[in-house]
Image 1 (cartoon, one colour):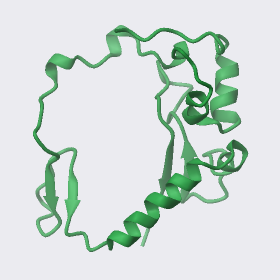
Image 2 (cartoon, helix red, strand yellow):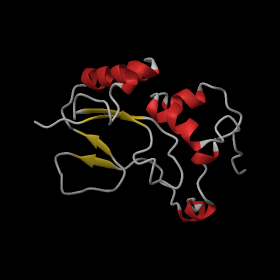
Image 3 (cartoon, rainbow, N blue to C red):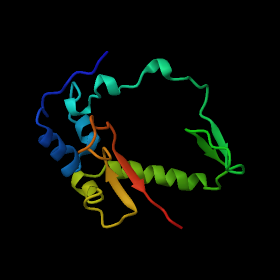
Image 4 (cartoon, rainbow, N blue to C red):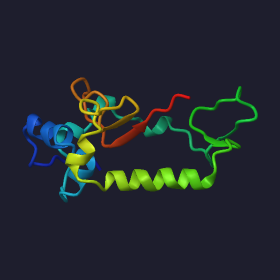
Length: 144
């Protein structure tokens, strides 16, 4: 079934202001209880993924870090020596971050973040995309 359009954001600038400039992100849109997607999020037919060409896999490929010369696209890393507690703390902190008010999250957007190491956003380049991406992200850059 093809997605239908939502009416509250017929004006692109209002949507960009709400999602990006105010920092509400896609989470803010989803919390509005929209019955349909804003048209800016609907991929043109020629850009949509063809489900016929997708190959099913029984599991996520595993890349063992003891053999770093064996990459396989989408993967799960094992034997990385990061304690499970650290991974759980990162997940908890990220969950809490996305629960913050839009004004607080927006302080970490690409345009406002005081640090190049932390970025909050939604689409990567909304001005250049044919359709906006239905996602919010928090990027944490670490350089040893």
